[in-house]
Image 1 (tube, rainbow, N blue to C red):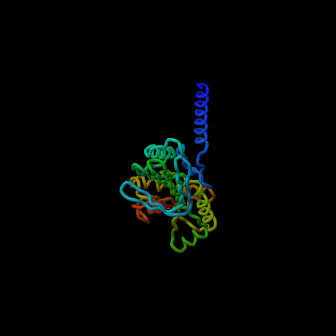
Image 2 (cartoon, helix red, strand yellow):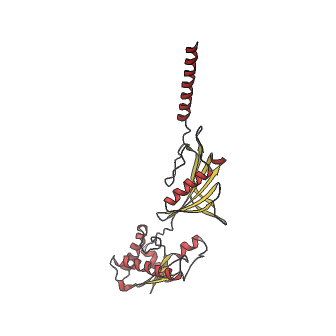
Image 3 (cartoon, rainbow, N blue to C red):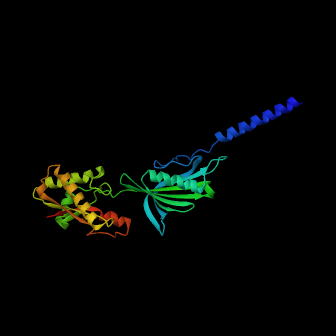
Length: 275
């Protein structure tokens, strides 16, 4: 009788182990065609319940206001697997905040269950909204990618603008706070060089402008350096340096409202001006 009881207890224990193993193995899979965004990985023991990607607007929470932006929106909805320990809202928020800091991004807003982050990568602004639900059982990550201010211009379009208006604003991307021209703006440099080669009598001022972030003195210096960098890049392609002059205006001649991010982006420009 005693042996029988021992066997029953042993079998019961084995069945419990098998049930636990089965529960561990039978995890919920990610929703069809859903995967983590390349920028951010998920919390441990969570799966993607739903996802969506499309061009749309998103409202982001800031310390004293909200900001609505448009771009390529990706929403990932995560849920905790069964029979595992969930993460607390604080753990989830800290995990994503640390990941953003590692990417060189900013934490713009945090509350108990929400956060707003911003990352600039490859000339593109990426805004992230985190919403934690059900005490950490669920959370949403909304990622909005805003394409940088790209500009496709030709030498002919430049010449037409110079003939009509006497100037043209060009949005050339530089490293932040520096005068190093980013590779994605090389096509614009190429077209300025083509413009100079196609019109041998043309002379230009290349004029740099900034937004109002920083001091007026530092902005004027930066704008001069950027204008000179463009001039030097065009000279390297065969144009005579004496046909061009580099001028830096700093923040003195804005064309848009520096109180908005879009306005500051428009103010950060290089103009070619016909002499």
